[in-house]
Length: 145
Image (tube, rainbow, N blue to C red; front, top):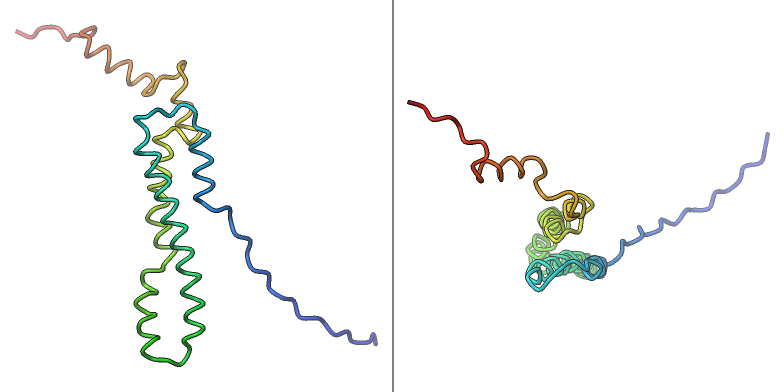
């Protein structure tokens, strides 16, 4: 029979953090050389949403640290429960994430939106052409008596 070996405990590695969203969105928006002054509001909105998402991550980390320090103190625990409701990263990202994606899309920051910006593929394609031709009177229906 083979001798038994002792297995060493495996230390769990903390998950690798993604790039700071504020930096990533800032770099993405800075690379959008097609933006004009009229896009400044959406640009600022995208940066603000990224900031709020990062704040939620920070608050959740702080919450966990404070909760560990307050173990056994019931009044502190009740206060922490209220704070916990405000520190739900999943809820914040779930709410602001799609909104941020929409803002970036509106700025031309998605592959589909960039394709629509190309002059050879005007936004709306065939549907826009049909609407324009109807508006110009090219396809007037015959008069009905």
